[in-house]
Length: 217
Image (cartoon, rainbow, N blue to C red; front, top):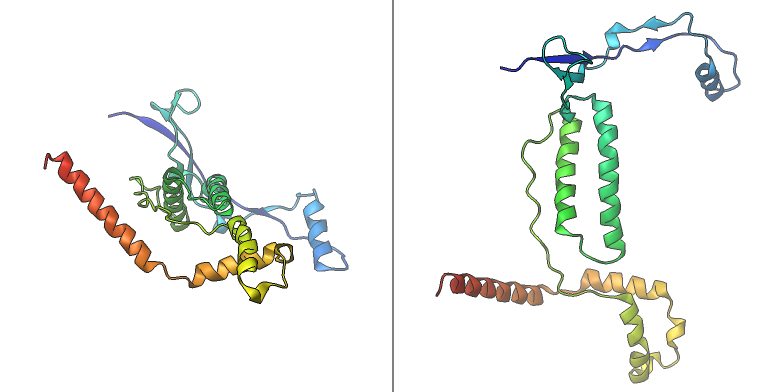
């Protein structure tokens, strides 16, 4: 059985209590932060932090001399786990937001990464170890249609020509905001359940035919 040397650490708050003359609480806090004199500091052992692993080496009494072994991230200090994972979550969020802004579907790879990152974030918040098994990615979603605002604008001239109700308007009088609000309203109210149901049924038939053909049927 292998032998390991493990270094564990916990933080003990150092504090001081000092009086400052200041016009406001904020000014008093600023003076305290800028004060470099810690001659009357005290250790608060009752508020000591959690124990976490800061190093592990292969062998007995091998700290900083033996072969270093990577420390699993869930043995790190919780605040460091949060800080390290924040960058991952932020990067994934930017990808998803960019896809939404471009009105495109986020790639399944990034959705799987985001799903795993959320699971790890939940573990960090709960003070638990990182998930052992990869989180199953969500099943792909296929976009059947898009309501594009530029193509809505392209329709304005034709509608004006054929509908007397709008004869007094020109396409230039319709703002981008008008089109955007109209698209949001239509997208929220339109019912495409029959079209989606028909597409799902046709896809199911196609999948069954493909499976039957693969079996030689």
